[in-house]
Length: 83
Image (cartoon, rainbow, N blue to C red; front, side):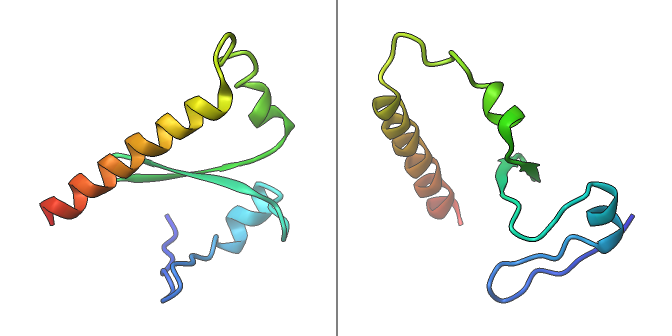
């Protein structure tokens, strides 16, 4: 297990051993998700987007994204109220 520290700007360093093993290069893009107390970091590549093909069939993607953002804001507000 390797540890890392978060900077004052909210940045973390992925240890070099992991970067080398996963062939992570500067400029690569990642999706960051929260799952309970875990932070999931997943590389964004063609395969990442392929898994979503067709899930919004018959719906308006913009409308769905706006609804999801509204739900996210509501969850954030609830967290702030609890703390």
